[in-house]
Image (spheres, rainbow, N blue to C red):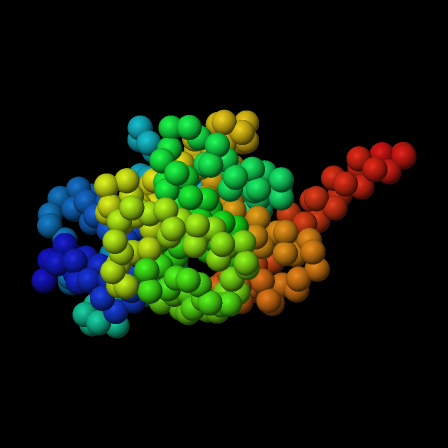
Length: 304
């Protein structure tokens, strides 16, 4: 088996058994191909399954150094993600293809300081949700659709992929939705009346007939709405509203968590609502809440 055969088997395993997202598959596949390409160039020969089990820690470090250089050097965070992908690849080689390599565990990735989420304020979130209806260039049903999607992101804390995976049979929404997120993990998310009303308004306007098993949100020509459309829509809206580049669709999910925390919700509940596997991921939102508290203090205190 060649190294590229092993890479294809790993990606198929991720897609079929691990149910990894298309975005994860693309990123891992890209990292794997760069890794194999570097080894082939470094060794001057094709990489086989056997030679992958013989890769040294020094070769992996040389590959990381190679990624740091060139016309498009990777950031420490991207390097860490690339190394994580290769570690996952070698775990697969060990467990499924009987090609272990203990040297991979000796390689340390770059230190990456986790950044705090960058939410928008409550007023900014409301502005983003209301703005599509004020766009004269959009059809009323398109404006209603965009408002419904953004309301889902902010009102339920969904990822774009989770909102766009909803089917016509899911609406009208019940009091709680069962959402399948990363790693095929399911969680229960309460549905606010505002979310339900926005989606029903979209359904009353959409010009296409939707079968129960078809995607709920549709593009202009009737196909499934793409994540790229949602991202482009928010980019246009933030330009009209004068919001910073950090005001993205995912920032609405951050805002959902941050505003709940600020209103007194406990971290464990927010973890469940967001579908985080680890509480440490959710704890990042306490940094944002503390920053808001200090900002309010500095503005309000007479001696600040």
